[in-house]
Length: 385
Image: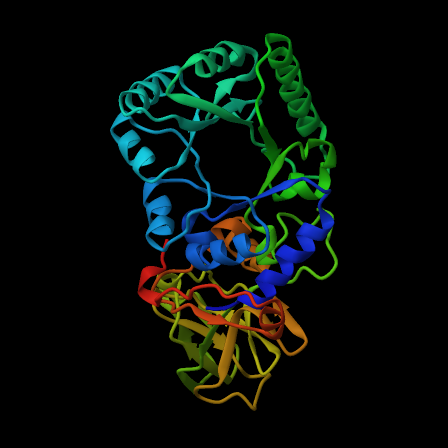
């Protein structure tokens, strides 16, 4: 998996230029930076003006701190009481959606003479983490009154910001703004309010508020086909392998587990030393790879460690030639959305699904050299999902 840090830096620059003045950029680097390497992505993001990082669990936060990242880190989700000491030790900002968690965090922080920064999560309709919008004022008043907590933020999340129909997103914005009005009447000031993910950043400017949370967009992958585009934002990652075997099969020969492909005539096929054990989607006679800039169809059912392709229309293909599984080769391209369609899933799963046994190779393109962006490469063995 080749990751172009120069392209990543350029994407962050373009996103920053597309943003209104004063809008804070929060870089989401959970799940190993969506598979691209959390530390590498974080370093580029912070070097390009991101104000804070966002992760999902303590291990992800600890990895960043161990790598020397001192920027604010918002720990999303909900925490068990036993995890709270580590939150303080790692100097994290805590997401809170339950009064019991807030009370436990307050007791611990107060006993140590500290104040733990918290962002209160509001459920405006996602039905997941957070306190229901109509019941949130009481929790916010309680958190604001706790001496061991510092109410720094208020946030919610869109389930449909990247769809053509924005009606539910508008309803959520209304709920969130109504709560802000209640806070204003109660005299409670919250410095950092945030609603938008990548889709919201692109298509819902009225919901930008104080900060946006972007994870997919800087990687050059848009959350959907209908989102607004930012000219110049391009994919950062390419997944490659090589043809391990090139061979002929005859009419009636079978290929792969389950005998799901039978040759209709003589065919020239290639075997790739990559399968679903590496994160390539489990497909059956569906999809294609790129060889010499041409599309080679996947045939049969791929295995944990191998995928077979039809090279009949690419006579120049030979053993150990480069094969692109995701990315561009010549004038052709395979996007994460393509892979997601073949698997019947979403691009997020495709990106985070590339396994640790695929070495990550970090490139330093011309734009990175021009911008003097230096992000720390991570050893391949440390990268996984």
